[in-house]
Length: 306
Image (cartoon, rainbow, N blue to C red; front, side):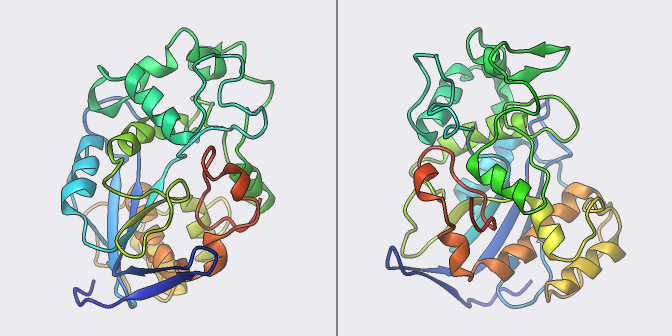
């Protein structure tokens, strides 16, 4: 990965803003129980075509480690992709938690609510929120504990998640906390981190795009894999040869061999290279349908319209 200071310029004509990124980071996140998570991986690449590399290769990250890295060690002018849902469905019912008088008005208030209820939960976990007497009514939990306000079927989807489905992806409701593919726990724990990053890093699309500096976006690593030519159903790469084929499809140099290949590490490496490729696409910063959910549901970067 090059260390020279070069720039990628992204113009946002509607806001009159030009962004300059020198680095691209992707974080594969985890909502699992415990202090440290083998499911967390952080990858970084610079401009150009240098191969992405793992940050602290071999390190078993905690969620707090990631928060501290973003707060104190992040290179200047980095576009950061977080593989988690930054919010919950709102547009379908006009509320995150219809019928609850504490239902927040926007995403940042939602993050604050999760943080307040979970303030004593260690490791940025969110157990207290999903077990909360009122909040739990909206979630599907383990042990057959489906809340009475969790709708029939797969659960509520955000506008961007419905758009993901229309684009051939397979999103899960963030209100679903059951199953290997669920993302609800990751989303809720991620909200605690995002709340703590308030006033430190802008988070798109909830915050206006700054004229310069770093920006956090939500990503979906399966989208990166698909756009790198990885066959549907095979997006979880666990070997170096498959990863190199996908990186090459994105115009990236081949990666340095890893001591251990996990789908978390390969997801992060490929997503960092993908972010570098697509960051200059103006349409991705102004997808059709974003305005009505910009402050509530947010958006997955790379999804073109909803």
